[in-house]
Amino acid sequence: MMAQTEFEMTDNRPLSNAKLAVLILLGSETMLFSGLIGAFLVFRMGNVTWPPLSHADIELPRIVTGFNTLLLIISGYTIFRALRSIQLDRVKLCQNLLILTGTLGLAFLIIQGSEWVQLIGKGLTLQSGVYGAIFYVLIGCHAIHVLGAVIWLAIVIGMAFSGRFSSDSHIGVETCTIYWIYVVALWPILYFLVYFA
Image (tube, rainbow, N blue to C red; front, side, top):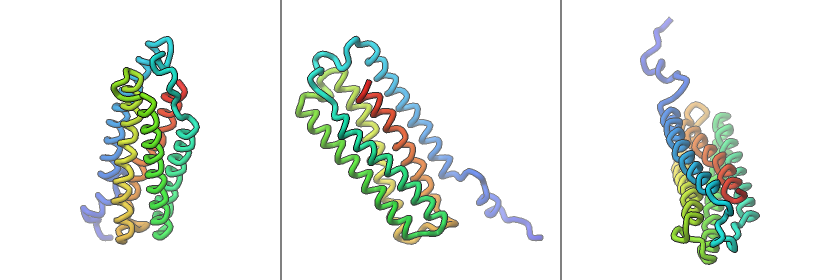
């Protein structure tokens, strides 16, 4: 029986370096969002009326954001299906699902951007007090993460169309999926906390 080479032994590790790096990244992201959510809760619980009376006439777009939330959740499902497809060596289906996921992510950002334009027009800005500042910092931080996920996904799509992934080699799709699903799972928490608290 032939002895395994060092390369073959390291290739069979249960956790790849890329996955480990993404998990470390997600740990730091969790600390960041825990701090932001904690700050939001401190300001929210420290005020008898929320939003403050100075912003009582500004209503957050709950219905449109609810629809937007649904789009993001669907994108989590489509990227999960893309990963399952490449694991089954269904390359074309994986490519199509990755494109659909990216489209849903872009739609989420466009809708959120249009909401912000309307809110700014109504007077809710970063400079309009604690309410506006904490809203844009918390929701904006998540939007930046969605944008980062969309850019990452665009790179993965390019790699998928250049034939870089197969059932045996798909770590790029896998790590992007882990990050994307994290960003998707975080959003409903922020949505209910900020839009309904």
